[in-house]
Length: 167
Image 1 (cartoon, rainbow, N blue to C red):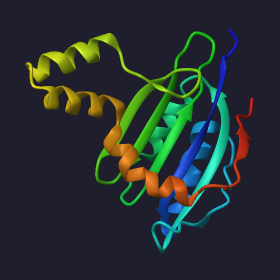
Image 2: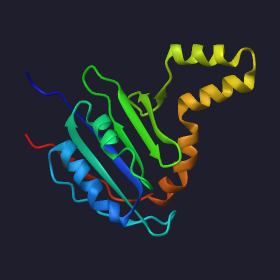
Image 3: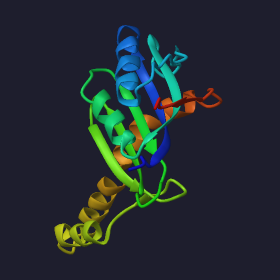
Image 4: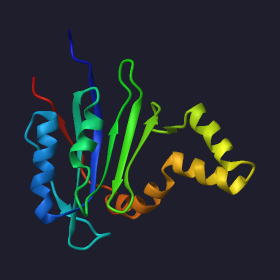
């Protein structure tokens, strides 16, 4: 049976220097290849570092990367996995304050909110438009976007390196 490959990008928006080698080890353990990231100072958080990595690996590697990095204090990151044969794309966002957020994405990277999630927002809102708005905001991960946006802008123009799985 052949392995279907996927690709995506890991954005480490902020990590303390002591955590950087551990992040690289976690990435390497998921992708089965040593990860030497180009760590740069994070202007949005003095004393922190940022790095980006374009990766290739088996389908589901995005979720594995997000899980491997989850739970470390002071680590902000996003993982994307593009759509591949028979599988939707995904985005995982993590902040120390909010934890992890996952969304299914389309071929352009837009978040796809399911019919069931929209129905839930209507039901939970019980006729209150602000409650419906809050539920849809949660479904879109707006709180994560708001918290990560300053870190994203600080990384504009940063280089992205490709890392391919061995085997």
